[in-house]
Length: 208
Image (tube, rainbow, N blue to C red):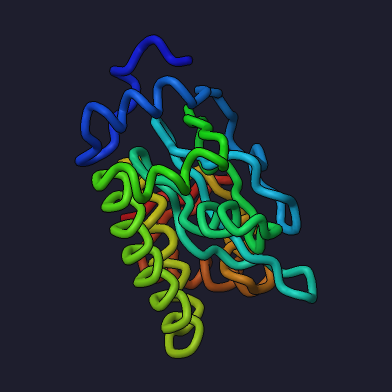
């Protein structure tokens, strides 16, 4: 049971629903790059980010990964919600993007709350709509955008998460999230630097 409810800041959640979260949830701290959900693993808890952020990835058959979306403070993973309530194995992997504080809710609680608490139902379905639009954006980018533009878009997303123009990320990490080769990313980053759109340093990229 959580005694400090001030940590739980979720948009439009009413007092009764917040009480349920406090009584049933557990708050845990995770470090950047911790994996909190593996593909093909059963989903036992629903993560709600209180501070920090997660990234949700999908692994292809050839071992490559691609970033699907980020989960920011006050949000949860809709894919985990859908898989958990159906007792399915996860089809995505969730990785901590930056040091995070996460509220973990037992999956057996979350389905009953949909019919019991309108604010919870509204929270889940608004996120579902947002994630659907983000997944369409990923499909659109892969189909129609060049890799250099996808790199810039990804860097902008990371900037929005941290509020910092200086992004701590390796070329390999960017390649993994974009589902391409590190050599391609390194070459295009050098090109973007020549175009004065970024500055490169070891494991850091500064957006200009």
